[in-house]
Length: 155
Image 1 (tube, helix red, strand yellow):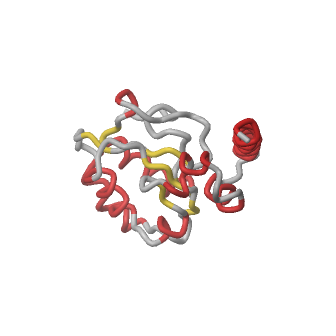
Image 2 (cartoon, rainbow, N blue to C red):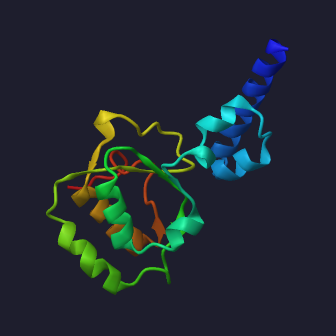
């Protein structure tokens, strides 16, 4: 019985890694998979630091930045959203006020990222996350990188 459980976990892990490689979203995979599997608890669908596309679409950039600033220091997994038509140039006016703020903030990681963006060395700043939000507006999607503290060269 124990071997069967280990085998299920291994198969599930290979499935998750394969889907991540193909740019699928972890939370959808977890919902489809067996709910009684012990490995499920480690993935974003059961994680309070995970934000789905539906949740993010309801937030303006300033709300996201405030969330990262106020709930500091745990990496937030976020599903990718399209920002074109969702955010406006006016939304960025408020974000630009935070570009000189070097206060510690939570970093952001894409839900499909295979980079482990956790721990002290991955702590971000309000300035850095504000820059990512501005880049997201310009590029048309958010988050803009696998891990907001290592992927992009932002001063």
